[in-house]
Image 1 (tube, helix red, strand yellow):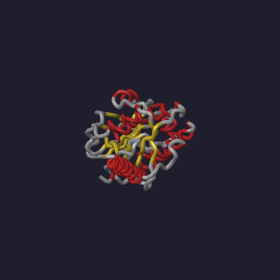
Image 2 (tube, helix red, strand yellow):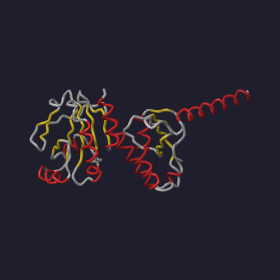
Image 3 (cartoon, rainbow, N blue to C red):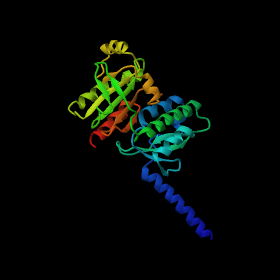
Image 4 (spheres, one colour):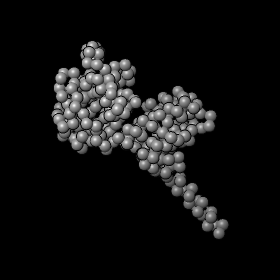
Length: 257
C-alpha cells in the first residue's frame, strides 16, 4: 500500500514537471515584478498582449480557455506572466499576487482583465448597425461595407494614447493601400468643426466620422480609448484591440484569410 502511494505521488510530480517544461519557464521572476507598481507596469505594457491569440495556463500550469484566463484576471488575485517561447508564440500563466504586493497592481490587473474579457466576448458577434457620414460627406453603412474587411479606430481629440499612435496607423494604411477590400475608418467623439481644425495639424489617413460619442458609449459600450475593431467580410467582429501593436498583428492574420 505504501509503495503504491509513493509511486502515485512521484507520478504526479513528474506530470506537473512535464507540464511546466512543455511550456517553458517564466521569462521574469513573478515575485520580483511585484516589488513595485512601476516594475509591474513596465513589464505589463511591453509583454502582456491579452487581445492576441495565446495559450493560457492556470497557476498549476494546467491549460485553460482564454475566456477562463481573462475571467480570472478580472475577478481573481493573479498576475499574468509570459513563459519563455519563440517570439511569435504567446504562452501566459497565472501567478498568485503576493500578500504584501501594492494593491494598485491588483486593481490595475482586474481592470485590464475586465476590459480584455469584455472585448473577447464581443468577438464573433455582429457589429451594431450603422449609417455614418464622414467629414467629406460620404455615407457608410453595414450594407455598403459588405465583402470588405473594415478596420475601425475609436478615439477622441484629447486622448493622448489615441493621438500618439497616429503615425503608426497612418503607416498601416499605406501598407494596405493596394488592398481594395480593406477599409480604414475612425469614429471620433468630437464635432466636425473641432476635428477639421485638429486634423489640419495632426493628419489621420483613416476616414473620420464625427459626433460618435453616443454611439460608442451605447452601441459599443466602450470605456477605454483607443479601441480598434477588425470586422471580417461578413460584418462580424473578428478582433477587438486596445493598441496599434495588437492591431498590426491581427490585421495581417485577417488579411490572409
